[in-house]
Image (tube, rainbow, N blue to C red; front, top):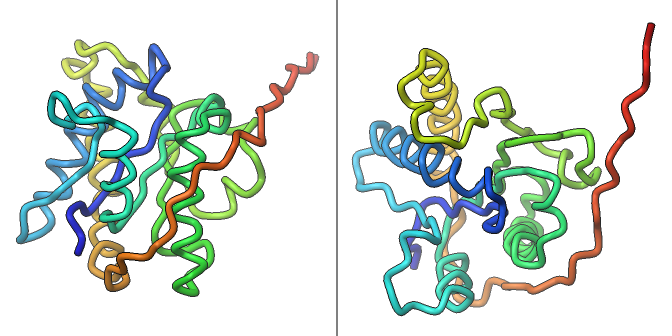
Length: 192
């Protein structure tokens, strides 16, 4: 059975992505999904895992019992073994259910969408890079109001997909791929 509606996948080692998810994206996403459904929303965010829990085991179990994956794209996301395992696990589930690239993975862009692998942008992506300020005081700016409205629109789309999630199956694959892709950074070209 499902235990989570949404699983947030992100580069946990980043000094900017991690605090942005913790301070801004996770709390807003959770409250805005909750505003759009009758049931209590359940969002897996690894920093909410209880003390003493072993993260990889807890993460695998949570992923198996989650309806929707929300990857937070940054260049290092695609070089992280754990992030790729989360992505691949949900992509395999989409394939097994005949959904292909629509239905269970809803990416948001934190930064640099130019260096992502082609397979990562073959589905709709919500670009939040304009609001990628990680510091907590960002919540006191006018920009944050616009960010919240953008996340609200994203959350409304997730609610529709959560309702259409396939029936839970205990044998869905959970993978651990090696990082096979290291993003190549584009060099800026001078233009007169």
